Image (tube, rainbow over all chains, first blue to last red):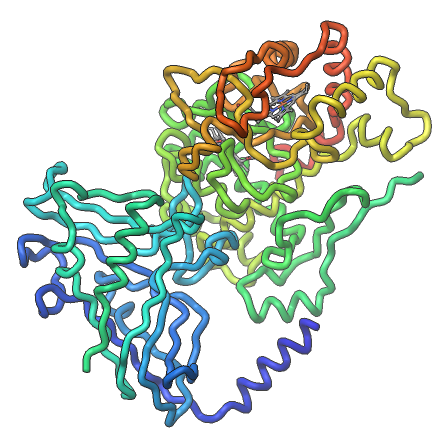
Length: 220
Length: 347
């Protein structure tokens, strides 16, 4: 069973038509400008932005034309992580990009993982197993916390507090997709004076994860 | 002898192929986990972390090595000693780095391959990732996994040992955690007097008192402490009054579901003779205290509808309690407790 499955996979990989590298470039932004960590704009500054982007797929109408199964850790501090190469067969037209913001529940209960999912990367909760899907830390005078800090570590996979979000965006065929992440939309959409710290799974994490899913768009 | 065991082993070829696909270890000699045929299938997915002799040995070395703690003073074994069923006997609440005290009693490490959740509240969902908790908890080992990995990489011996298991000297969080899990998965206890009686080994029988205790146990306890693992893996509120200092709400903290309020995991009772103190906060030192608790639970401790002891505690007279304890002592597995394969590795 397993053998044949593996051979099939290898075989199909060998026989599949030529693939090109399609680049998915992620642009974290504030007020339409590329994010600069530690720089104050719009009454807040961002110190950390990290999130999981996984299971990327491309769609033409209702038809899926490309699919990846793995997860990428996007880290605003690591420029290399902002560019993802997708091995898409040439001449595949698409009109939508789809991905998961965060890590699905099956992956969350599958034990220790490597690569971008390695638990040394600071995106894993040790005392309440599970991945942090989305991490945003910074400062704003609106936050009543110490040093006016705000901290959002969004995650949790157990129902009813599952936080992983499926994001589907209109996106034109092109060898380079520019994916915008408008952080000001997220921050200004919150009342930091009441909600400056969410660090564990629960209803708040779900609500904020839904908001975080809204800040993505493809550049036309 | 009816002493039949199931062997989990993987043919080398299949292993090598899987090794291509995943970062799973694919070197070394296959390690066969032995357990009775009548037991359920393990929960642990060995295909994602196939046991090898080298992997188990590496995990054992790590388990006993204080390099996992910031000031190199404590190791996993500081709180989980092999001859006390891998629990920490001296202190009700396990002492950690800088002598700060954790808030819970360290549980016995036994038959972990059959557990689907870890910790008293089930907050850890997989054995692989369990070690992250002590390594990153300031009250326990006070280290950060990334830093532990760096420290290990800088040693003389570890890179070589990791290479023997994973094919190259690179140490990663995943590899470290999987090696620790490998050793812990070998902590199988299945050779107590109870097991020998169940297997019908010649010349081994329960005494009259143990027999009576076993019958009472099946009637009163086995719904939760289910044979053969002596736990059903579920969570219950057993009517223990809340410790006002610790204010531990148990599984509720995790699920925020009122049905889990003050619920704790049913612990296995294997080697219970040696794994005192008892309960999540180690409040009882003796088995008779645990039984006295069960027989004196009053109705109304909790009026939540799902509460198992809503009608009051278990009814057992004094003789019944003594009999049940006699039965519990048949769960002691000396071969497990004093197994040199589990002890501090001497090189």
